[in-house]
Image 1 (cartoon, rainbow, N blue to C red):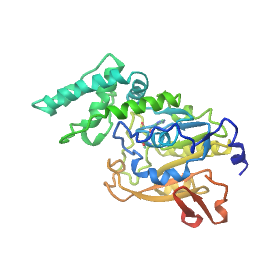
Image 2 (cartoon, helix red, strand yellow; image 1 turned 120 degrees about the horizontal axis):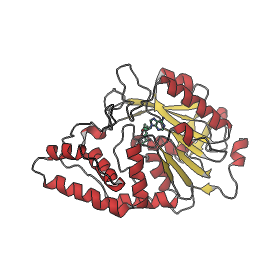
Image 3 (cartoon, protein in one colour; image 1 turned 90 degrees about the vertical axis):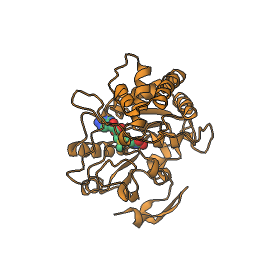
Image 4 (cartoon, protein in one colour; image 1 turned 135 degrees about the vertical axis):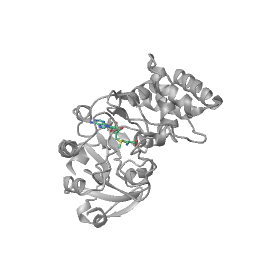
Length: 324
Ligand SMILES: C[S@@+](CC[C@H](N)C(=O)[O-])C[C@H]1O[C@@H](n2cnc3c(N)ncnc32)[C@H](O)[C@@H]1O
């Protein structure tokens, strides 16, 4: 509870205040995207925080949900995927030029007599300009197989064509809204490892950790978001970082697959197991009924979870339901 008191300095942000940009959605389809988990995550968003850290950014679903409430916080948005981060940076600084460039690709695609050939042509294109890289990245993400991001040992994107009937390659209003959200939150957007990204987190900051999933079986290894992957040792190190952040008074929320290892690593924290449908089969369990764990190191309201129930905007949770 001591941390909660420290969380309300005069500078702190109340999510009740407006300045919101509602309706934003991720501009990429992303393995492990949190769209379907949002309703379970939202009750754990703190009422007050100064800075928001999302160091496994991906599609950024929770960042966009926060912007739907307020943009009065400072965002630190990072991920090791350089192409993804380049796209966010371009959206922030040059959204009109990006829209022009990706519109050009969409036009070519819609007019192509053989869309598959065009896909492979664009896939092998190596632009020299960051705006074109971002346009190519968004185009490929929406026309490739299942929105996957996978690269070969040379770091070249190698996902096959997706055979989508009418892919919605981008939404201009959404891109312009994202640009505004990134600027309003003075977002720092960088391609760095999560450990480097969270070094400066302090009491009063809100940190959402959504690492690549720990695989539910040995054969399900869709952790290849980047050339480096994220193995069991990385999951263990992340649990240590989670504890460190919590100790320093940051408010930490984490999601991962519901596996024995993840339960073991976070056994002393409050957890909620939820079943979600995954549109991108990222853990090899198929598309439905995938179990995820939400782990939180802070309480949103003053009621202690150990004493029974606590309330949130989404209703009342029972402590027993949260303890596995
Ligand atoms: C589960 S996804 C995040 C999904 C995101 N929350 C969303 O809503 O789309 C995990 C992300 O972590 C990134 N990643 C993998 N290893 C990383 C590392 N060591 N540091 C930072 N980011 C990493 C991947 O590139 C990927 O975008």
